[in-house]
Image (tube, rainbow, N blue to C red; front, side):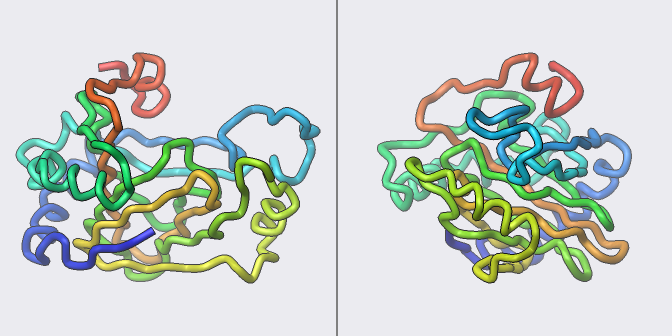
Amino acid sequence: MFDLEGFVRPAVIAACAEELRPRMATESFTHQRWHNVYFRPEVPGLAADHPALHPVKTVHHTLCADQLGNSALKPIYEWPALARFLATVLRLPELHTMEDPLASINVITYRAGETLNWHFDRSQFTTTLLIQAPEAGGEFQYRSDLRSENDPNYDGVVRVLRGEDPAVRTRGVTPGTLNVFKGRNTLHRVTPPVGPRERLIAIFSYYERSGVRFSAEERLGFYGRAD
C-alpha cells in the first residue's frame, strides 16, 4: 500500500466535493448488505456457524461513472500516464481503464454511522482518491498479510473480528490523496464517520486486459440497475 498525498490540488478536490455532494444526496444508490469477510455464502471446510463467517453490515451510497457529468475525476482516471505509473509500481505489463459505463469510476459516500465493513478484496489491487474527509472517524483500518495462498488463517480472521489483534493498523488520509492498496490477503474496513460531514471517495477501476465490463447481474447487485 502507498499514498500519494496532494495528487490532486486542494482547490480542484474541493470543487469536486462541492459538485458531487448535491448529486450524492439525490441520485445515489444505497447499497446495504450483511456479508462475511469473504463475500461468499459459504466457505469449503468451514461450518456455517464458524466465527470467521460472522456476518457484518456494510452501508454506503454510490454514484456511477455515468452520473458524474463533467467532473474532473474523469480526465484524471483516463490520463494515460496514471495507468502507466500504476502498472510500473505494481510490476504489471500494462493496465487499462474499464469500459463499463457504470463501474469504471464510482464515487462512494459514507454518512455518520455507516461503514464498509471487514472484508478481503477479490481484485488484485484497488485505486482510490479521497475527495472529502469527515470531521472524525471514516478511517482506514487493516491487518496486513493476514492470510496467504497456502494458509487461510481462520483463527487470525476471528481475532480481528473480535477486536483482539494488536497488529491492526489505522490510517487516515487527506483529501486529494491517491491510495493504491492490495487487499486480497489483507483484511480491512472503513470505520464509521462521526459528524454531519460525509466521507467521499472515488474508486478508479483498472484491469490488465482491455474491454472489461460488468455483467447485467453484477450491475444490478452493485448499483440497482443494469444500464
